[in-house]
Length: 69
Image 1 (tube, rainbow, N blue to C red):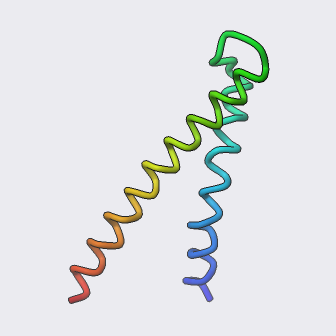
Image 2 (image 1 turned 135 degrees about the horizontal axis):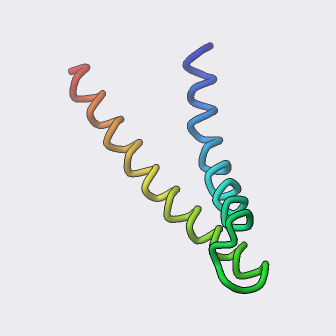
Image 3 (image 1 turned 90 degrees about the vertical axis):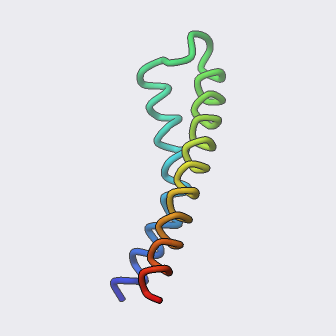
């Protein structure tokens, strides 16, 4: 049961990261323009962070597979 919840949270974080990055960009007004630019910048930042997060998950999975063998 605990492993199932962790698995759900792992994949749910792919949705939470872009939403959080858009929110932070709007709060700190990172893009110096209109609100649309802040939203687009937040989405692009979220995509980059998701890419980095997926690479980290890949390395963790490969490392755990090597230890179990």
